[in-house]
Length: 113
Length: 113
Image (tube, rainbow over all chains, first blue to last red):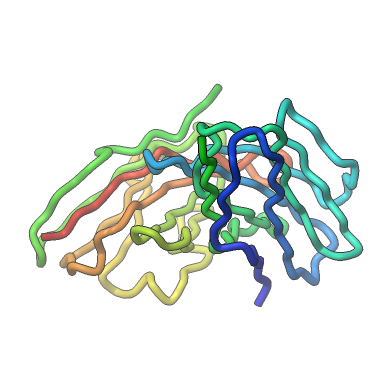
């Protein structure tokens, strides 16, 4: 079965530090999408990014950046200059072709003031 | 931006009662999904629905669960006889396939007492 691993269960950093959340996925497909979602304490799933497997360029959006390494099947997420509002659970989630999204177990991020 | 709408946002029901969770997917989307997240755990796939039928279901989606698209706009999840362990957040999602996005609703928190 295709799966995704988020090895870091919980991370705590002090505000303004940079933090990287790891994601490793398994796939036999050549075409897939990779998502990151944020789940704040209020519970909704907040879309952060979707990346097509053919697009290996790294992406930056404000304080967020993503490093996609197809050769190692990793799609890591970095928050620069973290803020308390970044505290949440973050899910990496591949989608294979037109199939369902599969969620990792998530990384709970605590940003300490 | 188009949204997936879920109602109610929170439902409390007695064990053994039937509940129907409602979702209005994005209008031109073709694929519909239900996911479940037990408190503190990962988001788990329940069922996918395409072309007016179930395309895939997980082991969780047993005979107690059913889905329906009764009127071409709503997409419902019915739990026939709720158990305590059905208490969870239920997310609906819809997708247009390919590059047409994958959008989650804000969830229905179901509490079975």
